Amino acid sequence: MEVERELRHAATDGELRLYYQPQIDTASGEMIGAEALIRWQHPKHGLLSPDTFIPLAEESGLINTISDWVLENACRQLKIWRDNGSEMKMAVNLSSKDIQLEDFRQKISNLIDKYEISPQSLELEITESTLMENPEALESDLNALRKMGLTLAIDDFGSGFSSLNYLKRLPVDVLKIDRMFIRDIDRDENDKAIVSGVVALAKSMGLSTVAEGVETPQQLSFLKSAGCAQCQGNLFSYPLDEDALIGFLIRQYERPLIS
Ligand code: C2E
Ligand code: CA
Ligand code: CA
Image 1 (cartoon, rainbow, N blue to C red):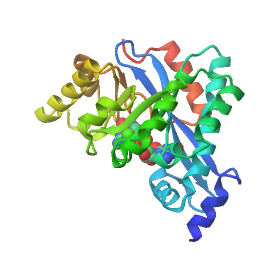
Image 2 (cartoon, helix red, strand yellow):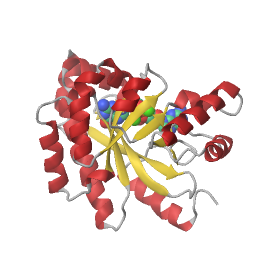
Image 3 (cartoon, rainbow, N blue to C red):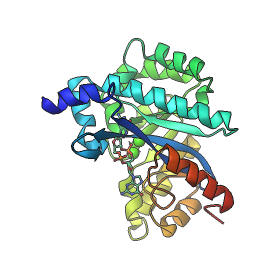
């Protein structure tokens, strides 16, 4: 209850932070966007990772307030990029509880107007497990968001119980291949087969793929040969705060990530 009380104030007291992890075009090595990842700068306990408070936020209903804060700041950052001539995209993590809110679409539409961003540059990530908990209920919400021009991604793909029937029906654009399949890709023939298979399935359904948790050049080279469109992971960069991200972009301009 104590943590819940503190978390309730965190958003209004300016204790939430947004970090950005670069997403890289596998073929060119260029940064083409970032995933926004939340942190809580706790006055006593320091910088807290989302795993320590997002589950509580989801249980207590605070998640909607937190997601509003994340969306506002992610869109503000997108506008800064655009003002600097960059067409990069921003991926944001959402809970199914956000998408089902009655005024969610209106909120998004207001942000798009306020920050003059193109809807395609905003990518909404929903985990496979929450999506498949109740796909019927989410289908119409997702369709409406897609109609607005937003990009929709299934996060942690392969870790939950995806129904191929829903994969066919739901209006998604991107599959984010779960980190656990990437981790042992150099050693494990089954992981290789799964990742190649997911990339091929996605491609034939007209979807794009992002590999998460890419840590080694060997993993990158396999993903390149498998045709995975984008990569994200500590090999390229840890999640960075706004200032560090500027440094990353400058360095990347001077020295491309993949030569
Ligand atoms: P996720 O969406 O799967 O995000 C990727 C997580 O993997 C991030 O952890 C990131 O720092 C970490 N990661 C990235 N590259 C590597 C790598 O090469 N190796 C390893 N070992 N890890 C890597 P993070 O930032 O601690 O976030 C954890 C989870 O918290 C996220 O998993 C997401 O589910 C949730 N989350 C983060 N931000 C938000 C948010 O704004 N809203 C909501 N609802 N959930 C969020
Ligand atoms: Ca994510
Ligand atoms: Ca993920």
